[in-house]
Image 1 (cartoon, rainbow, N blue to C red):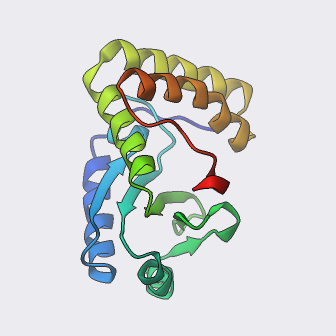
Image 2 (cartoon, one colour; image 1 turned 180 degrees about the horizontal axis):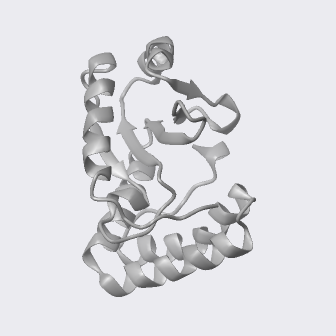
Amino acid sequence: MVLVASDPAWPTAFAAARDEFLTILPDPLLIEHIGSTAVPGLSAKPVIDIIVLVDDMARAHAALPQLAGLGYQYRPDVSNPARLFLRRIGADGIRTHHLHIHTDQDDVRRHILFRDELRADAATREAYQALKQGLARRHGDDREAYAKGKDAFIDAVVRAAGGPERRPFWNS
């Protein structure tokens, strides 16, 4: 796991990906830049996370071939009925984007609320930064352990901000 310094080009990369996505599914209910690359000043894995809220998952499934044409790979192993997960791999074989397509408004709200709390509160952002750096050192080759190590912190921040509780994906 390699974290890099915040890059001011990340919002532009999100906007370009968003515009591409909108040519395929032109009427999502919401499309947002989430994750650490959406928080100025926060180090991150250099992967642009995009979350999309749709009201019809069947239309999103139907768009998978077109998304594949843009370089997105559908990951059914980490998707569920309320969420499709896709990743985009660059020419160098490195992940560049994650696309999260949801029908679960609460899950989308959790992601946006957490991002907004990090943007607004320097102490929370610094604590998250320290947690991520420690997890990257301990779990550099274990993406799942790195992600799970952040769960309690994220849940606490979202809970303190009045957000919805995390639900296991199999109950979505």
